Image 1 (cartoon, rainbow, N blue to C red):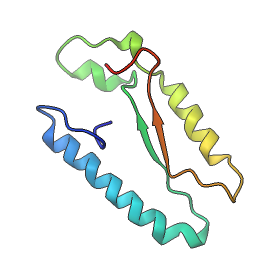
Image 2 (image 1 turned 60 degrees about the horizontal axis):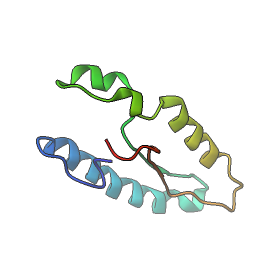
Image 3 (image 1 turned 30 degrees about the horizontal axis):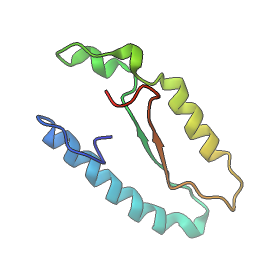
Length: 97
């Protein structure tokens, strides 16, 4: 979600994510006529190895499992040719971390 909001102490990370949003929007338009789909994926906190390297205690039991993020991406990719999915936003039922 760092592409959608800022986090204290993470300015470089958030800036890079914001830049990717603009990059993919342009890329989507450049490739649309070729039938190439470009999808931005915005998962909430996902239980990956990244959290093992960050100081602090993180509620990993409340994070999305990576397989559920992958399922959402697969669903979007499998849509018929006339259906476009430009972005996927995934939250967690228990709310933000």
